[in-house]
Image 1 (cartoon, one colour):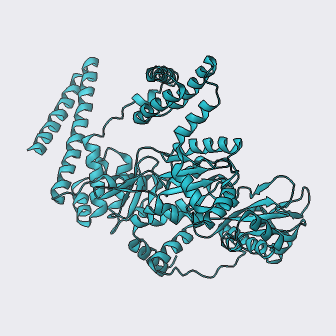
Image 2: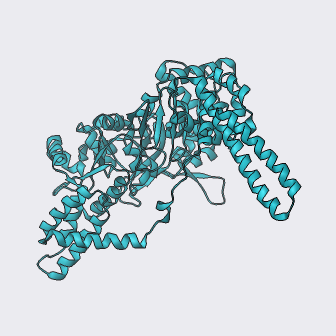
Image 3: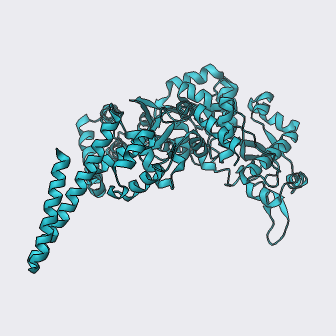
Length: 579
């Protein structure tokens, strides 16, 4: 890595507004000098993800993920270093110059992106009038096909295979993208997608991750997705998010539909904040992805029984991320595409306004299954409602839905209250969690002093000079802190990346984000050093006291006398430090 390239990296890091970058993915709230939010890298309900614009770093105190803006983009977008650097460089107007790379030798991820892009162009070039006619019959205009880069895979076993190999791509690489399949016990390949309408799955940077193919005729499977690959995991992305994320972020509101055509129709009718899963069960990863941009999601799945079941499953995943969920009732229409084709945008917007809170929808749907005139059926309906409400943690929500449910069931409120309490009691009894009662010991004054010295040394050259003169590294009680301090004192201008391991980086990020500013740096350093020295003396004194008792029991009085002299000297040193 040349000097100029290193300078480019530093310039991009220094000129990038880390708060602006991360705010594009995580909803943050200001707390003192820092900003906090729910971590996008692991599931949590209490915000532990912290961003420091002042120190230009982020750190999660829950999962220990952290770093600078480049690290964040690499992790959140799944990019390699150079890709993330280029992305941020474009934002701040700093070009990232790299040597031209041959397609055969460039990184694996970039090779796969190139293969998918070429395949997409090939599919687009074969979009014939019969496919266009199919979309027009569904109400989708021709310009939408260009926006979504819709294509077609013709009949034939190896049309795409021949095309990509002819373009110089390696068959093994093409196979790993999932576009072609190797014949068993042969060195030959055939196309995965044949006689299918092709929907490319595109990420927020415009990179094609994979494809979804709909059968163009009566054969199974109706929908076929690219298999998982190094650049595509179908349970972790959403169809249309590349076009929808700005609108979702602006409104903090997303519409979730089931089908690709449903989504295209929504976008055609100015509902650009619409996304769809990829023909698979909606996952927790997809819920977390939406959570980056939205506070509320309206689920508008098909109105048939399968669609209702899928909507409830999606709602359960979204609830885990604390998103407000609403359910859209499509009335007598099969899906959003049909509804929009017949009744238009205004009618659909009216449905969105009339959408029910997911909990209300679930309760009403459960109750509607039973004939409440029959006592046994009423008891079963009550049990199902109790099961739903006993899982809800917000007492205000539970209280309000008890009133609604009691009214629908024709019961007194107190009957539901007692049943929910009984259900909750047995759940707690079965699932008793001892870990909830484990209390972590607070850090000692010595540990806090060591952490403060690390922060001072990291941030200030004069602090490093004072510390190097006043304290010996072996005085640190925490071996990791000692190693970190030893490293810091050797550096003229330390950076987190200069540390020896990822574990050390995690420690230092946490220390930097927890520290408060001090009025008198030199005095604060001296106070910390004094604390460390006094606690070290106290530790040594305690060890000698224990040794004295041991030697007295053995009758080694000469040894006892020597130990008592050592103990006295330590006491004198301790008192001198306290003056």
